[in-house]
Length: 468
Ligand code: ASN
Image (cartoon, rainbow, N blue to C red; front, side, top):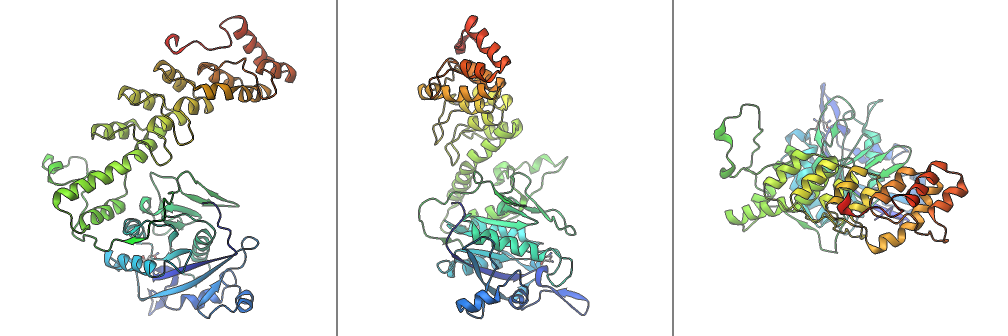
């Protein structure tokens, strides 16, 4: 899933309109055709020498090398007509999805050049319409046309091409101002600044600075080799109800088909509703079931995010809706893992009160207790131990080497965390030395005193859960 290392990666750039290519016609900015020709004239977007040497066809452009031994080759497909995105609807977004479907086999990734006004809607809709994505799809655009001297078009488009060309991020994303966001998590927040979008409830999937930082743990994992499916039958007759202070009680119409949007953006909520209600062949009951299933599918990730952030309100709301708070997210981690990793005693307490398993294992066999130890979250360790969590035999066996490493670095808090979790601090490391010997050799007096006190007093083995 990391950097794609084929010598040539081929992208399709679908140009739908928007400010990026706009020109002034009688003083009014209108979407301008011929973007490929403009890009061809800019050396940052096209290496003519390489294109000629490889005999690339006329409509095909190639970026200068960003990393050795790899080239990003791209074709610009200009839509007819070009749109100011405020005139676009679900119909046009489904057409974009169908264009991607038609060319899916020929290209390694896709960039959709789109106006900013409705780009968050477009990204949300595409994320539901395109099912089983195995390739990167990135929407981008700009606040200032590419022809202007001071613009954000070049940076945004180049960034999107580089991300789609170099990485396999199999989901619909939006790239703007050096950040790659999950498409159905963004919303437009500014129409004048270059930082036009934000993702209020999910950090960016990637950030481009001096280096590219990708949050791989957030990136969707492509499962299996299922074929791309395009859901073109989206329901147009959907609406959004925004809750406001003093909203009349008559509008708490849960029974009238209102589905909570949780922390979704309004763009994503609308797109999802349109997708669910448009699913062909569904009876009203099926649709409700489908909406429930989608909610259930989202619960593990939402609950994990809330638990990690210590957002008790959201956790409570999810629990009150009858959601199972011990469900695993994609990597096998439960909300309790997330709360332990985030060092959130409040969330841990709430989850334990709701009766979740205290010792679940994720895909790598890690338990919440071990994650709390690694994070030195002593309050969480205490709660988990009191609830009966224990390190596994394997974890206890492996602890010796880690304890010696902590002793060598004078990491008292780390050692205390292991002790609190029930580890035997006299366990030998890989070379047979104990943490105490290592600390003495390194002259880490505070650690030596701590370990000696344990030896002489409470013992190097922490008290059992019942005494904590
Ligand atoms: N009106 C333009 C559009 O959405 C705004 C932009 O792209 N910056 O097409």
